[in-house]
Image (cartoon, rainbow over all chains, first blue to last red; front, side, top):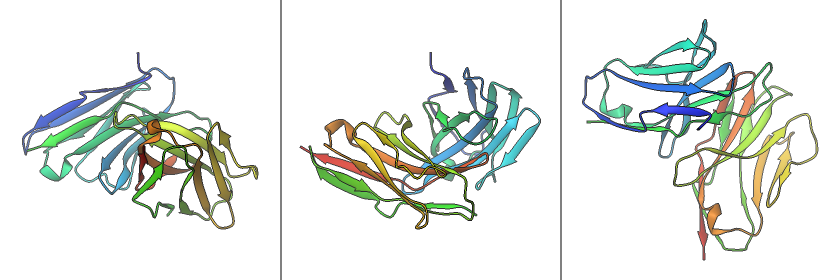
Length: 114
Length: 112
């Protein structure tokens, strides 16, 4: 089984709908991240979390919200999806206690908003 | 704010040849980490190589090596003996603290 699991893998939704992307990890990491990938723009950070009580905005948090339900679970919500939120979304984890380790990624969720 | 710049959106290399992908970054910090990730068509993000800024020695992983120039804030990736399986998007990334920032990527084509 994958260490970082994202569900769903692919999703098509309509404009205005609420959608949740889920992420769970078995690596025991306390840091979790949500990124968005668009062609030509690379990966951009949406939100990141150090633990269940700590949520931080990234560079493109508008239109998104997150919930850290447990150390191992971090979900991303689009309250009212719009077409320009069509993208590939990645969840990632990393360890601590400091800042010396790389990020481990899930398989990504391809989201299409029509 | 830290930024990571990959100036080559696409590159091509002949199979078995050597190619170098460029990455520059902007930071005022002295301690940080740099990474290269590979994203094949499967879209999985795979760590290729890691460099600690406090280490002067360039990191190497088999056919992959980096040229880390701290003063110039440059972190290029060299792929030797290119193989068809190296065809992918490559992302340069910077980490200081808990933020990990990525460049826009370079798409590498391998010509048979």
